[in-house]
Image (cartoon, rainbow, N blue to C red; front, side, top):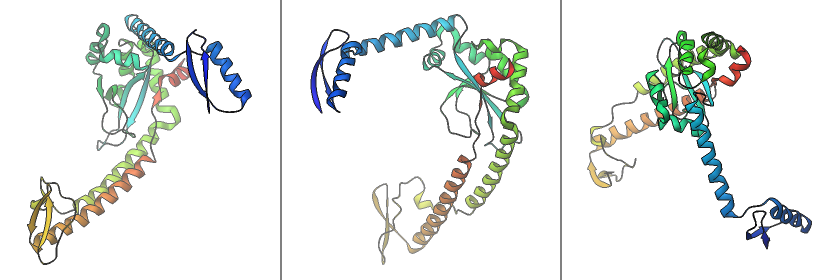
Length: 279
């Protein structure tokens, strides 16, 4: 590695560290001199790009033409008989932030339409929060139509929404896959519930306390609760050991179940895919 003094394309001087063959370094130096920027100019350019992107995003909010993707995701990991659907929007971070900032009353439109900033239970992946609404399967087209008034203009046409709903159900047999996933989830939860039912109640001496999981001593047994030494009876020690073993087995099974559920996940259907199918 060697240091070189260079005059960047922005006209300012600086130091760069280069490695590689002499010819490669010469090429890099030439690039810096023609197109490179010093750290200050680069930072200013990025700030300008961010400001311009925010201005464009605000303008799209004002024109009711936000660049958002719409997803329909089945929620199979619930105990409900009917699988619900999570309709949510995602896209450029500037625009989703503008919703939270309620620019031009955009958040009011979403909340009035029943959309919340949430991460509902039942998702295949424990994903991030987003603006969405949990609905029954028969309410998809109506919900998509509501998004038209929230800035997703392609959904202003109710016929388009109906075709989009049809595409959601036909895309890779997603409904059938969700139903199988839901059935598998219920089976796994029943199995997990069996193990949980066999875990005895936590001994009273441990309730609400931090225990490091170790019992000390033989003739006189003791444990540390909230880092304070506590003498226990042989009966207490036996109950604690029984609970510890049963709980450890339950946690082991629970982790296996969680891993099995992760491997059979499904994906939502994005509006960019829908556009190609319904237009």
